[in-house]
Structure formats: C-alpha cells, structure tokens
Image (cartoon, rainbow, N blue to C red; front, side, top):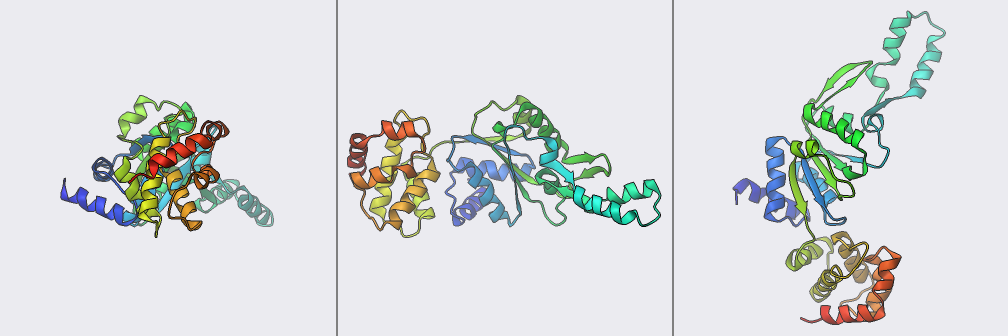
Length: 294
C-alpha cells in the first residue's frame, strides 16, 4: 500500500473510522486528483461518516447539503436577505438616492445569504469538505445543476456576476440508490461502493465507537447483527444500528446477550413494524444462541 494512503488510513482510524484499503485509496485519490467522490451503499454503512471523518483528518470545515425531493438550485446555492434589503430601502426613503445606485446597494454581497454550495466555493482560507448527502433523493434537474457546479466550481449570481471558487472544495456525494444517478455525474466522480462490513471489521468498529464495550458482548452483537442481515427484512440494519445497540446494552450494564434482553431492545436494530413481527421471540432466541457461541 502507498505510504500516503497508509498514513491517511491510520489518521482515519485515529478518528474512529475503520477504513479498509479500498476506502482509504478512494479518499486519497479524490483529494489528490481534485475530483468528487461518489459513495454508494445501503443505509447505515458509514457513507456520511466518511465525509465527516475526512473533514476532521484534513482540519477542514464540513459543509453539508442534505438532498430531498423538490430541492432547487436557489435553496442549495443562495438567496437574498429580503428583510435586510427591505429595511435598507425604508432607510433610503429618507435620503436622496439614484435608483441604479440604490439597486447596487441593496444587491451588495452583504445582503446575500450563502447556502451550502455557494458557501463551499467562497471559503477564503482553505478548501472545505462539501458533503452532498443522499443525492439520489433529489430530482434529475437538480442533478444536472449540481453537475455544472462541480465541473467548474463557479456560480453566477445575476446581480453580482460570476463567483469562482477561492479554493476548490473536497466533495463527497452519497447515495442510497433509491434512484439511479445519471451517467454524466458518475463520470465526473471517482466511485466507491461501501458494503456491510465483515465480522472482523464490524467488531473493530464497535470497539472504536463504544468505549468500554465488553469483548464477549461485542462479538455476540456482531454475530447477531450479521446473521440478522441475512433474514428477509424490509430495512436491513446497518453499522449505525449495530453501534446504537451496543451502546444501549452497555448503558444497561450488560455483558452477555440474552434472548429477553435482545427482544426488548430490538428496536435499536429494526426500524420497521414488519421486520419486528418477522423477527419474533423464537427467531430472536435462535439468533442469540448462535451469537453467543465463542
């Protein structure tokens, strides 16, 4: 493994993120090549956390754009502070102002409210990490707009002109694959698919994220969750749910996994009524018995 990649991987692990070689390599290359990194995978596998830990490792500001259906360019980019503009107009009523000069005044940069995309390209000191979270939830029109921004790292505000990036941000896009991302955006990015971790990696994550977690309990939790993911569920629990469950069991002062304990805390793992019904008491007992074996 490249020494620089090894160093980045170690830095990520010091921040509590257990990265495999592929993840560390993708993060390193995206930074070195100045390209966005598109990270896909099931919910809860650590896609968003990857951007957060990169910001901490780089000592950079994390700027997050949470995507959703109906998100438009203005919401993501900028809007004018209409209240301050109106107040300035009222003050100007008592003064003699040339109309053009007044327009230039109220559409000055100080009245501009920067939203995540604009803020990411106007940081004056150092490049931030721009997290475009769940980009698959936005529509095709916003995706096309986003592609344009990521291609040139500049935006045009009609009243102010073109604003270019002072420092090109480090960009991480995440997708849960609820909608297929267009080929044009994919070609613009480096790509990383994050799967549910294997036993050793998930165990390491639990120990990193849950201080004081008993090793026997950590192993039982990991085995239980890994087996649970193989069941016919609507919403498969991710690593985030594994961490929540381990924290809950630790808060309850438990060091051993028992069927009744697992049953009453199953809501830490499963977030769907159908799944709770499918994994009934008998299934929980079976999973606990298998998970408790050393």
